[in-house]
Length: 203
Image (tube, rainbow, N blue to C red; front, side, top):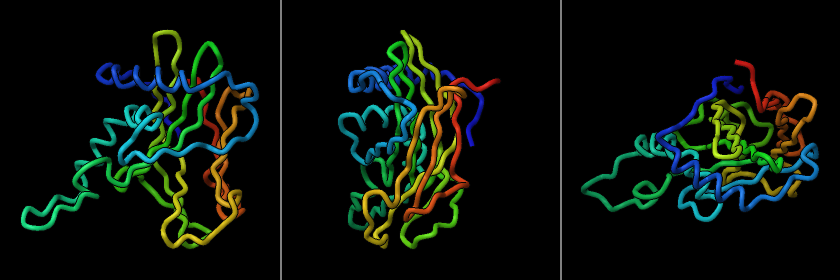
């Protein structure tokens, strides 16, 4: 699902610099990167703290999504859900601190940017294919690799579950130098979403 093209965003250097600084300060050396860990989620509607850093990483795509939002009816009541903020936007991320560099994988979900949806074994839980960005910060430079990955989203009709039922996991695979992803929905593995994201893909 990942793209192997590396893009450098000179126009967003200020945003990425802020992202790097904030995330790096929040991170300590990852002592066991190969262990499976649940990814962390951020609500990007009105991002604060660490969420603001990831919103900065996605600012161009958030702007794109916001422009596609339903227009405000000039003669009607102001709907604040579509008037301000990053409407319907959230992300998950997994980061690894290697001491000499920081790697962060982020997947963005908005109503307009995800490209596909897979059948879900449980009503009320959606499995979407959304844009991903793998960012590597090292010294005073950074690189960004665009791709795609699954985003599991619970809706209002989702059944009550224990905390281990529906989870996205990530781990760093040392031999292949890649981030491995696996997903469970209601304790069922979603094999078509499993993938490896190489940190240094061949061009």
